[in-house]
Length: 192
Image (tube, rainbow, N blue to C red; front, side, top):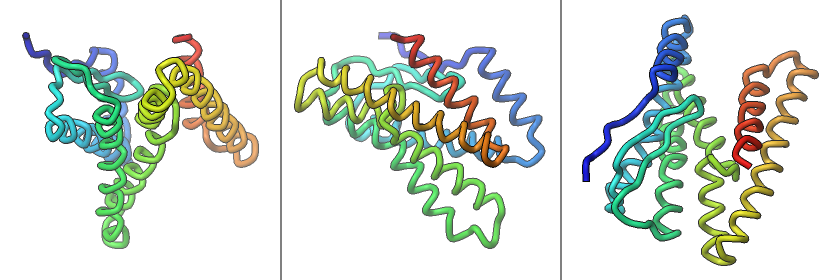
């Protein structure tokens, strides 16, 4: 079987490049590094579990590993999904002691923490949603996993969106969270 190379569309690459080059604060680059470490956690887990990865596809909302060669058990898929948030939370904890000395460490730690916690939300396209799906499928079957995943995704997307609206109306801030949650809602309903 021919191995695929990591894939990123020209549009996604251009958006990432413009975000990094146009960001004078350096937060965008720090966030990209945090995201790469998150994906590295998935890749290390795949290697340890001997799960063959045929490619990595980047999109505006993250990356997706393409598994080939065999079907994973629910336990393997759960561990593979958990590895990314685990790597993010470990990176946040390791950078935290450097907060007082380096502003970039504070930014990296916060970006990693947010990335790890956000990915643990039980939303279908997130690691947490896939982890929930694995657990539900293991104990209640695939049909229950699908229904439970849709219900949980809708509830948590609604909570995320409501929080963004609250911040916009109450504090006049949170436009990025609002746009992010709205794009997730549109993606969620576009797949149904």
